[in-house]
Image 1 (cartoon, rainbow, N blue to C red):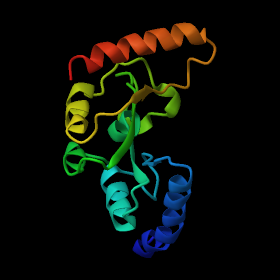
Image 2 (tube, helix red, strand yellow):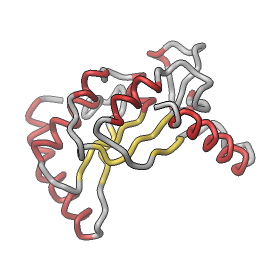
Image 3 (tube, rainbow, N blue to C red):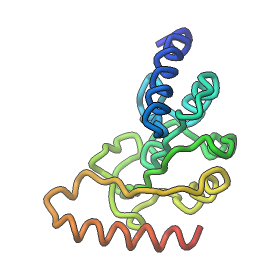
Image 4 (spheres, rainbow, N blue to C red):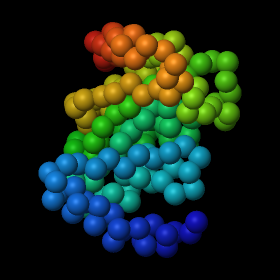
Length: 160
């Protein structure tokens, strides 16, 4: 990767934004921890500011935020209207942060991510819907997973 790769991404992102406008949707660009391109909140937000398209916004995932390079100050630099969606996850204490994998996501409140602090910072710029995203519960009853996930999210959000 080199800085010019970000410049080269702008025309494609503009097309994605126009696609979103055509279908009246906002496209969330999710930073992914460990990615060499768009691996943190700050870089993603800065690139989207350069693109400056109303149908492109940052998607924040607390897993990628916690396990990656992002810092709370990156969220504090966001402006209202720059966030499209928020995935809320937690992770166990038993896995070192550097070794976390997508399948290590657990129910909100069972782990160590400082969710209240992160969500309080996000609440300054985003008041929309959120989701609970997990991958390792596929062998469980989906109604049970959904109910437990909803209950945990509801309790957490009531405190923010």
